[in-house]
Structures are given as structure tokens and as C-alpha cells.
Image (cartoon, rainbow, N blue to C red; front, side):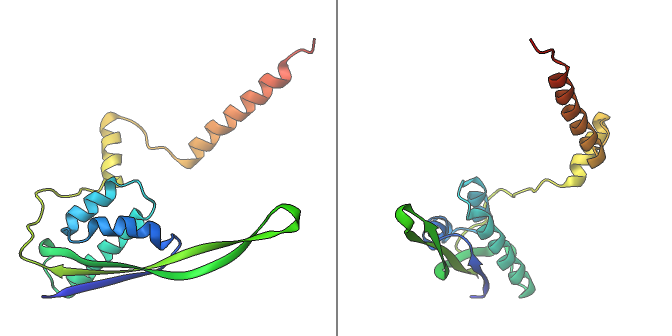
Length: 166
């Protein structure tokens, strides 16, 4: 079977937290794994989803069929540990360890698992602009937002200093 590999090094999330997410997508079809990650609340889902997309791109370079790709293994290892100290009572200090993770993902081409009957559609900026134009809204610029915020700030200041002292 043909395989595709992708690695992510020095992710600034503890391996224990990343493993919770990684174990849930092992053995799933790529589209199912991305859909599942999209619905999970954990912080590590974003980097893992990006890693899966990278592995899929690597598979395309190797001329593998994207529809048959399955997450064969996902391995989360301990990375570098940054050691910091935190000030405590009576002049003491406590060690704070900032742990990092290394993730290795292996995708495999498999005929056993069928591709899911759905596709993930990403919203594009151009489509949003077209919808706004259809409604007749003008596109916002940063200058327009700044002018509005300055007016709001000025209004508050004017109201505060307009008061009469009692």
C-alpha cells in the first residue's frame, strides 16, 4: 500500500492534550477526520487539521488517490520543554514547564473504507463579497471603521465633560 507522511514539530501544546484529539481520528477517512476535527472544541484541532491537509498534499505529489486516503497512524511525542519560574510567597520560586509536542501523521491508501457521502465546503471571501453586492451593501474599508470608532470615542468624552457639577 502507498503511504504519505507529514510531521509537525514543536507545537506549543502539551502532548497529553494533543493525544486526546489524535486518538479520536485514527483509522478514519480523511474527509471524516477533518469533519470531526471541525466540530471539536480543543485548541489542538486546528494544527492537526492543517497537518492532515499537508499529508494529503504530499499524497497528491506521490500521485495517490485522495478519495481513498485513511489516517493509518498518528503519533504524538514529547518535544522540547521550556523551563520557566514563577514567583511565590516568601521569596521562593516554582518551576513551570511549558511542554511542546511533535506529531507524525501517516496516511494510507485503502480500498476497505469507503469515502463519506459528504464534502467539506470552505467559505470563500469572494462569495461573501458577491452576496453583499447582491444585497446592495457597500464593502467596508478600514478607514470607515476607524471613523466610526473615533466618533464613538469623541461622543463619550463630550458627554462626560458636558455635565454640570452639583
